[in-house]
Length: 290
Image 1: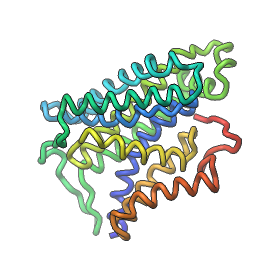
Image 2 (image 1 turned 30 degrees about the horizontal axis):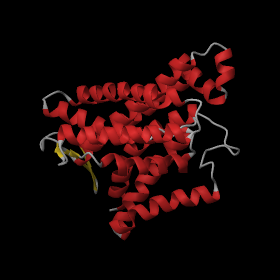
Image 3 (image 1 turned 135 degrees about the horizontal axis):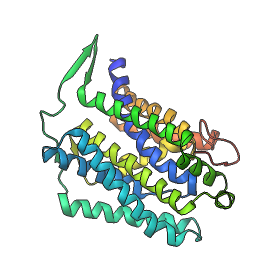
């Protein structure tokens, strides 16, 4: 029973991790909470499931969703952030909130408010190890998350783009003086953030076999909780907090009922803010780290 719920929690945590990384990348580089990430997650799910329903392979659906949401992420950067770069932080925050409403309304008008259902026979195989049953969709979700996290780690540590991201996160002005193309790197951060959210959207669609226009709100808030618990601008903390909160949520439902699910997740977020505001792996003093 507990092992089964652990697998279910890790699957959900994999989705939370990718969305939280989308938030954390932009937050770490620019100090801005891009609220549109939650709805890019939702749009990624719709694009991916639409491609699957059009008989495209799952891999193509994931790549297509990542491409569409990466482009939309750049649009958000150019329209909602760039003109307001020197404005008070609340201005780009509200601007990205406006984009999230636009994306949700667009999805409702295009696909309708009813859930978009995945084909029932897709990835329906299950594998049993002792008392634990793992679905094919769950394995794909967790494997995709592991591959993307590993790729992100390599990108951050071993590429010029990653060096640029970390340099801007430390000091944008000094990074520009050293030759880092700040506008290009900033657009790349928004694109990468959108792509991660889009892939996570396909994953949640595969996991629950459906997607709705309102799924971004719930998952987006949970991802923000993951980011806070792990460390607001620390992607390694997010990697720890995502599975932690996923398992905590599933275990709470299994042991105490669904009524306590959100209370424990957001209760942990509030406790973190009170006891360790920098998060599990964050650095004191608000120093940014990506």
